[in-house]
Amino acid sequence: MSESENICALITIDDVENYVLIINAKLRDLGYQGNLIVSEVMIIFTKRNPASWNKKSIIPVSDDHVIEEKKIGLRLHRFEGNQYYFEKNGAIKCIDNTINNDKSRFKFGKNWKKTYDSSKNINENINNYIFKNCIEDLNEQEKSCLPAKTNYSDVINSFNIIPEVADEDKLPPYNRDTCIDVRGNQSETVYNSKVCQNNPTKYELLDLITLQGCEVADLHDKENNIYIHVKKRGDLRVLCSQITTGCFILKDPIKRQEYNDILKNKGKSQHNYDNFTFVAAIIGKNKKIGVKDKMSLGVTNFISKSLGIKLSLDYIDEVQG
Image 1 (cartoon, rainbow, N blue to C red):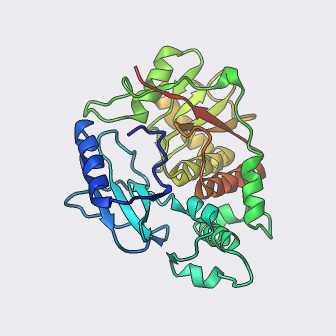
Image 2 (image 1 turned 90 degrees about the vertical axis):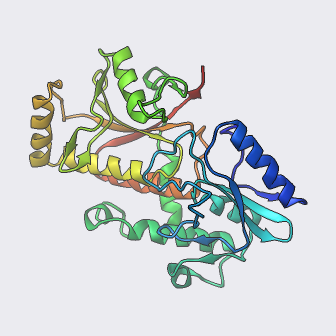
């Protein structure tokens, strides 16, 4: 089962029992932990209540946890008849497919009733629902950075205008065979370290250096004064929250000085905070970003722009061997 395979499409399965047996055999052959199981209930879409998992047969992965190569949770959700959603690791990615297929037989969270408008089609209702949840998750400082009458289209447009980094400033590919930690798991931390080891003149490692529990960036491009946060595929809300926090810290003179003192004590280079930018570096996304992630990145771009900070995207290639 390749990583590029569409894992959340609405698919037709005539013999579901045989299909499950075949997939589970493939998983075992590939050394994965967990089994594919079938759910007869409709999907419940809420940010804080993702698809439930049978812990005896499925290993769950939370929003803020790196999806590990050999731990995988799969579930078939029956939509109707012989049609199913194929979902991975509890990530609620089926919303895009719901919009595309204009299906309305889904249960949503409590805010769904507050945002539902019978005069709008299902696309608009779902978009407004996600948008409302996205905005409600912001703190007051973050909300103050948004235009007064921000709507769904504004946030999507804010995502659409985020530029990609220049080719010469792209991070090197993420090698799945070499970016392995001591426990044998895929690791962004190992990747970040390798980037700096291979090009110490250009990159400095800031990964795991925190101010009051907040990580400003994973990497610092010293040549271009770029602060970079690296995140593997999956829910990008954590990445966006880290970038937003980093922007606020580096724009606050007191917090910036506190952070600078921490860097100095760890032997890091002196930073110039007059003209810096941020980059959201996404491993393995292949430019296929869902609605929720577009929302998160669009809001992050609004906030960074309001603080006078340019935000760019770097889609890191993923390779093996």
